[in-house]
Amino acid sequence: MTEPVYLDYQSSKPVDPRVVEAMLPFFTERFGNASALHAVGDDATSTLDDSRARVGRLFGASPEEIIFTSGATESNNLALMGYCLRNKRKGDHVVISEAEHISILNTSKALESLGFRVARVPIDQFGRVSPEKIRARITDDTILVSIGWASNEIGTIQPMRKIAEMLTGTGVALHTDAVAAEGLVPIDMADVPVDLMTLSSNDIYGPRGLGALYLRKGVRVTPSIIGGGQEMGLRSGTEDIASIVGMAAAADIMVSEMAEETSRLAAYRDRLIKEILARIPHSHLNGHPEHRLPNNAHFRFAGIEGESLLLSLKDENISVSTGSACSSKTLEPSHTLISCGLLHEEAHGSLELTVGRFTKESDIDRIIEVLPRVVKRLRVLSPLYTD
Ligand code: PMP
Image (cartoon, rainbow, N blue to C red; front, side, top):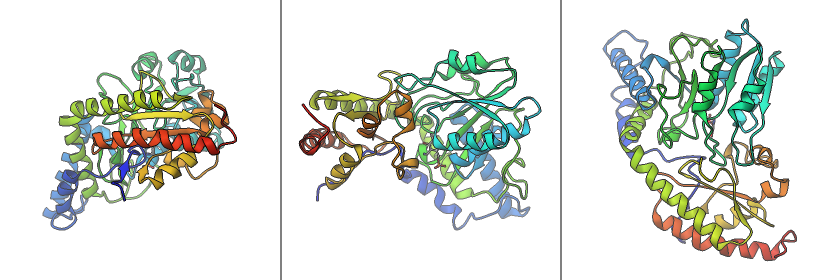
């Protein structure tokens, strides 16, 4: 069997071994509950405070602005639901884009069932949303705009600074789901003033099952998890100190290594895009050619199904994706690709390759060697393909 090649960093990342090392003492010796008043509890409290500061530092946020949650889905729920419920006296209207993650799209539907109104702004063929189109949907009743910093599928980066500047002084809060972008593009709250931001630990090589919500000072939300009042009363439940330390250690590594890492990943991405488009006829790049995450290469190949491509590559011990892992078990084509204007068969013929911290040059060599051969073979069998 050939060496496995993993090119699906967008759906899951290994936890960095240095992060695991940092977490280990907190399962055994340092197991305290941060709400307890004895010395073991004090250790947990100071570890929690310190971790909050370290996670905040990666995004230019103060410790009090970071709320730990169970992951990005919960953070997105708390941001949208929590903000709207808390601020409904100011208005009942929310603006999102058509390309948002399923956890935003479905939360926005839940908001509609509670009587809120949601405007969904279209994206262009590259997956970008225009600040002007957002502005055009804002009414006197709009209280919140939620735009993902970058697409977890096609890798397009949104013009967040322009969107934030456009909303400054309007009284409309800005939320961003930064999960796809964190650790891959610089994000600094002093530079791009968003009000709420969703973060995930695994996306910076920390443990799964942990996320955070950045809440700018003064921004209020109604909690959905009620209990002992942990996390400034906004997210009750005993804090998972081991995982929180893991996210903090992951953030420290990003602070020192992100610049070097992202330029290495961008070189892999550029090689993938150049070689695959050159070697495979009738292949196209999805997403934006320039405003693109450094880890993402997303293609479509005329005449073949992404699923059959994925399974053929699986036989070669290569792991790839056809789009968002969060909705991969449905037969629906990607809503993001359809919003970019692709036909159903084009959206179904798409392949997402995402590189990461442990990708090697030899992994890139391998996919570049195997993919053209596999596409050629599938096309011979395909009734949809005529050269
Ligand atoms: N937002 C984005 C952009 C994502 O890619 C994901 C999934 N990785 C989520 C939210 C939800 O994350 P989780 O399933 O960890 O809650």
